[in-house]
Length: 99
Image (cartoon, rainbow, N blue to C red; front, side, top):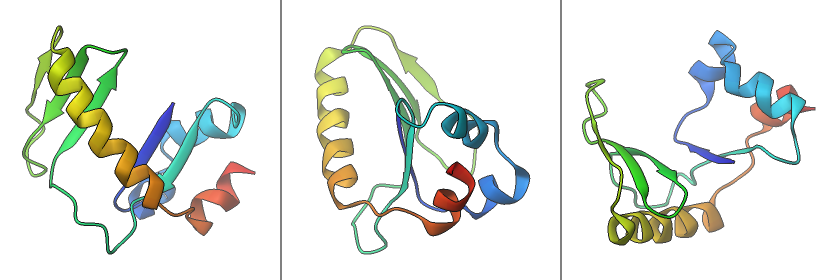
């Protein structure tokens, strides 16, 4: 599992459960921070397998939708994620909690 965050301060401050999971399974769960200079779309998404996709298009709202069988959009978002992951940085705050 790979997780890419814009800002990790709230997760660290509130003690998010994913930080605990990443600490328990460091070889299976990686958390990084999006590079500040990387041009990104203001959207939250989760990719499942090769065809599932959860989207939350508005960051200010907790509403979104699921696409259960959309391999084309999944590949497009995966490509976007891979590019962002390649430029991402390790967050010292997360690293300290993940050791």
